[in-house]
Image (cartoon, rainbow over all chains, first blue to last red; front, side, top):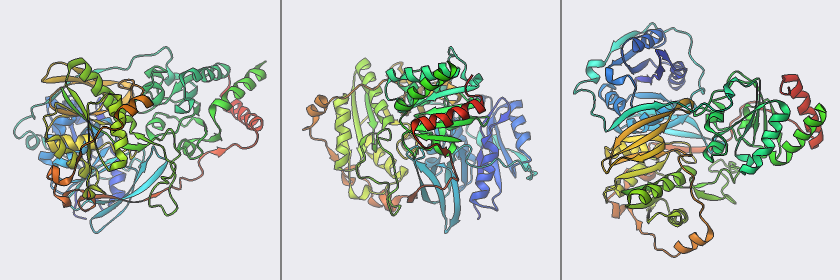
Length: 328
Length: 263
């Protein structure tokens, strides 16, 4: 395949995100012969640190170094990428908060196809990529045919491809700053102001050994009591999935997931949680996961060690009673 | 402020178990409960709140057919002032780019200050807002969970980023935003409200009305096409505990004790 592949690198404090090396594997799965170039926007020493860490993993590392990129703004980065990326490129971007901000518009500006949230690739034939996506929060999967002959922007789900740790590329750093900055830093119609850090709640769930985590299956705010009772009986802390925070039933600091907290307990009970990848992405450290959900098809059962198919509203009070009896 | 909200009718995943049909061509759609896509509902609520604060109007628009009118009516019952259905045989099979191109044509008929979409819908793509903004050459912010109107030229928006943090931006109008759930608490829409708008005529705009070349959208214009639906073979998954509730609890307690789950 003649199409060049690029991986957009997310980084923070001079360290590349875990997705950086995953995108290499993704590109190789797409095309085993692909030479993959990294594209990194940032400033100064932190940018250089990211570049030198990745130079042994990518055939080329393209850097764009400018004071205005100290906090990357997808609107600005998009314009810069359009200036430097060759026509018909394959551009891989992590499907996370920045990637989702950058990628759809980038595909339009490059006049490339767009393939969001890919989890696997199954080959290219006659300019058509066969890819796998999920729909309905992972309840079903789909095969997608994507015409990549005029280039493609693909967001790749974090964690879907194993990181390529081989460091076998012996690449070189290419400074693309001048080319990217031709005409100056794009005037921003969207201007970054500040990052407001998450409020710290009364319990730090990132430090909990045992989490009793509740999701949409609780149905009503009043029912939360059965979860709190169970947690108390077990000596556990209460966490939750996104819908519970959206409904303002629990504070944001108790939300597990890519948009909330990353937890690493020993035991994780997922109660009435369907198991969207954004939620599961916040569970680290390989805990023992117990899932209870009335939907036997809920994706959470794919990641859990033990599953119980039942309505939590019926099951949990009985479980709590038994634990309390046992403890006397 | 003139606000347009792009909405979609979608199966309500909190009400349905989604299954693949027998030949894998679609999901099983008999008995599905449909509603407005959850993210879109937050977007409409936000639009209504902004209008109520600074004046103007809220228009909801969807691309679809007569079945999709119900979500337009639902959001009008909620408080949107106008509804528009974009419908044409040639729109069928559109990919994200096609849907965005159709919406762009509608947007350009009027001077909207603010265009909102849901951050994603049932297919989890999260693509329409960003594509539409790029096609219109307007600034864009995704995953917006806070909006404050500064004046008629600019607004302040908060974006959801990793770790529960929030990225604050100032953005010039007109702009496009994709709205994340949790930005507000969407108001309840009762039967009575739906009844009030039941007989309203919803204007339908066709490809001809919008000046869209038929081969640029729909199946013929799509670069991404869904081939099938399937349930992936992900290995064993969880060991499902079976038996009476009492037996299940016995096994579960044993496991919890062994794994340190009960203190």
